Image 1 (cartoon, helix red, strand yellow):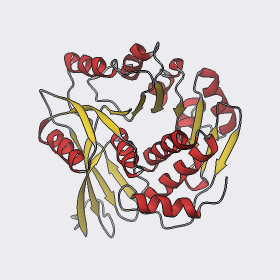
Image 2: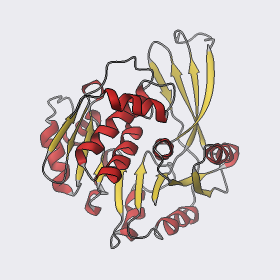
Image 3: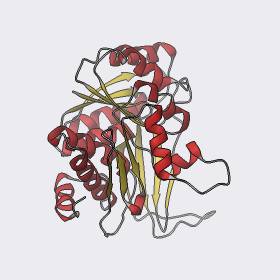
Length: 303
């Protein structure tokens, strides 16, 4: 079973404007709600690909109830820890001449509630996959990822991590199967301030030295590059279509990579499906549909 962990899920309130005028009253063209959070996005794309998963994390208040009910409607299994205080966050995504995001901090999570989640994840069995991604509520310790992974160290659990800075580095001792930094995140890890001379190859190889088995670097409009555990480097490009939103594209890439690898046992084919999923979400309003993913997959050039 694949388990996705979203420690700080959200309801994403998406507002479409012709133009965002600061300091003035803006009238929206349309609005919509989506259940958000990086791990949840992974579960949603896995569902589109016909792959079962269980979404884990914390949910609180009326927004937490909405998150759980919407996932159930979509056919996605969830086993969230219900918080006694606070509400799951609402993030605001403004789509105008540029994309603007306002992400809330998240609810208070008690030590007891934190331990309930760790107890749940510690029961994962050999052969399971755990995908941990996204931010953590301010009330949780900065080594929360490490606390989740430590009880799994002696098991044959496949670990996938999508996180920033120290949150990512702390997990590398557990030899994750896949990590997915983007160009900006590599810069924050390896470049001194005011230095923009990023060596992607050197940075990715350094992360492998630290313990990551496969490093998938997303490069936006320049595609992606995979540094695989077998020593090969694979590159993929992107199709030229209108980009409607980049929100969730990286999560979609992770879902596609895992689904593709499980289906083919090939890093190259995993990258190909991951790229198709990331592209498809970028070209969609919201996360990609199954139809959009496989349409893009047919159009992608061979790696």
